[in-house]
Amino acid sequence: MQYQTPRGLALLRDPLLNKGIAFTEQEREALGLRGFLPAAVMSMQAQVERVLTWLRSLSSDLEKYIALNALHDRNEALFFRIVCDHIDEIQPIIYTPTVGLACQKYGLIFQRPRGLFISANDRGRIADILGNWPYATKLIVVTDGERILGLGDLGANGMGIPVGKLSLYSACAGVHPELCLPVMLDVGTNNEEFLKDPYYIGLRQKRMTGAAYDEFVDEFVTAARAAFPGVLIQFEDFANHSAFRLLHKYRDQACVFNDDIQGTAAVALAGLFSALRVNGGKLRDQTILFLGAGEAATGIADLVVSAMVAEGASEDAALRRNWLVDSKGLVAKGRTGLNAHKLRYAHDQAPIADFLTAIRTLRPTAIIGVAAVGGAFTQDVLRTMAEINEQPIVFALSNPTSKAECSAEEAYRHTGGRAIFACGSPYDPVKLDGKTFVPRQGNNSYIFPGVGLGVIASGARLVTDEMFMAAAHMLANCVTEADLAQGSLYPALPRIREVSAQIGAAVASVAYQNGLTNGPAPNDVLGLVQAQMYDPQY
Ligand code: NAD
Image 1: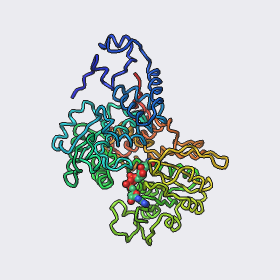
Image 2: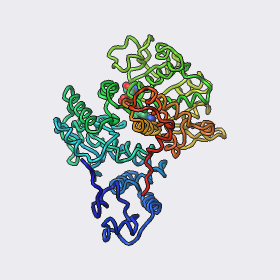
Image 3: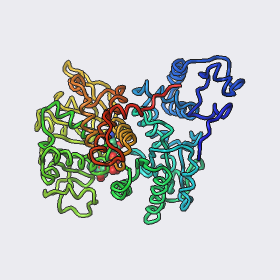
Image 4: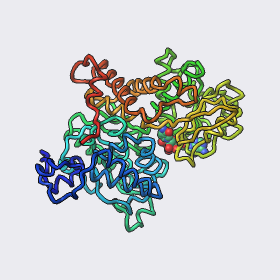
């Protein structure tokens, strides 16, 4: 469908074109806006300050989320100007942790729909629904709402996640909002509370499962690729049992990736590369023990294995340097009923029931917490890591904060300030023995926006592990010596657009080198990527 540029009241109601009271006198005259706006004409910068002043006066983060969402629905350029210029302050409101609460309350706070809601009742006519979307989409973030953050099945309320993620794509990497489409595949919910909630916005039935579910997702993927040729589809917050299956089903035939598995992997690998710049080690010599064996843990371990192999290790040796502990203890050969994604890490080893004994037995150089078990990196765990290693690598990546394996303060205190630390939740700087440590979050938003930008800019047909490895290397390269000196394994967030451009160029280069594009590489890949970045202006 051809999108017609509106005038008058319709223009003010089009969030992609509306400037509110920033429309000039001449524009008001030419575009039929006379009478719809008050007399004052305000610059974009003045509007930014006005909105921030209002926002900061609100007492809760949820109110701020609602206010920002309403702005997003009214005036996209202004919304993105604010997010870009104040990313440190705004990201925690439009994304984690506030978005989690927003999804829980979505039925109550829902105002204007954004993106497409496709329900199980729409089987057989998904192509028609996608045909209703008026923009030429290049990027879809899709969820079925079954595992929203660490909050479980939130059904159709999970739509807040694709919406939030796509905002970060536009703000952090300049993917134009017009190219972005959030999609909720509403297959029902098993959340009993929601099923009884009169304000629940989704389909009031138990989740569709099995072959019917697979056919539904397949109809969507096929229709999306036909409606928007070359579209990049990011799977988001699917439960474990669907996430791995869908990724493996589509990754070699369509332009798809799963951020919970692959984006997390790249951000953690980048943290490891930075940590090795601090202690001078090589990745292939590390022994890594994961607490958790889900999407994050096996995603990270798989990419670490690829990176160790790229450093010259055999695959077998690389696999044996990665160990997983799940809720039943160490993943090892002989344990029955292991899920397929854990099998690569089931090494020959007598059973070990707990994490501390696993540390004492396997003597890891790095521990990575991704089990969402708050406080699991106890004083004993941290002290033991510091006994075994001069500079132990400790990543407590679970979030929200209540699920963190340890706080930054605990990590530094119990290792005598020797831990090389990254976290999944935000922590303030820590002062210890006269030194100030500035821990930074291994947030996926360092990776997925740049990866998406690179894939879109180059027109890559597939998203490969090599691209995530290139993204991880580039992210670690963007970390300065000054960052490392203060204990920061990631760059400062306000540099995110510059970092995303570099990651985009690294990803696009992999696409060109591997023949995944239709044309040859341009002379200046970074220039090509930067030229496509949306800079919100009037
Ligand atoms: P998941 O549900 O796929 O996996 C969780 C794993 O933890 C499972 O393997 C489970 O067996 C294991 N587990 C549960 N209880 C345990 C226990 N007591 N001891 C040991 N293992 C236990 O979830 P996921 O997607 O892998 O995410 C896990 C955590 O990582 C979440 O808190 C998530 O928010 C966080 N995460 C952080 C980042 C980041 O910081 N960039 C990215 C992705 C996920």
